[in-house]
Length: 136
Image 1 (tube, rainbow, N blue to C red):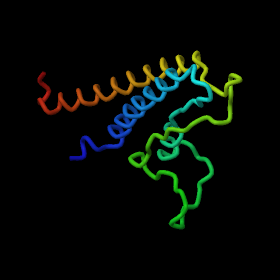
Image 2 (cartoon, rainbow, N blue to C red):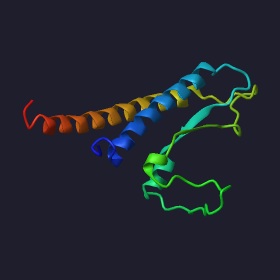
Image 3 (cartoon, helix red, strand yellow):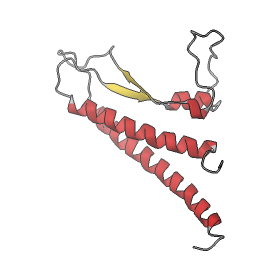
């Protein structure tokens, strides 16, 4: 059934999955704020999604050989990726976790999660309304 597999529902589901992954990455960063040598991690998702949706017209890589890494072609192929910031250091022990920046990221992630959940709930409410033939 294509009702649940349309592009908007898939993107909202991926946004919720990404927010969940991002929350665990941020919690891991905060837990290691005092660990010497720890490097913060972050989740990359939105730029890949914009490229897949055609919103970001950057340089298009040729992926015509089997060994080439190809960018995702559709929103369904986009996956969140956890990357580590190894190039910066905030303290002499090599740790680069800024607790204030991490807490701001936690707040932003919470807002994004609630917005995606609200949108998904609204779309499911519309489906429920149609299934019930306009009755509650």
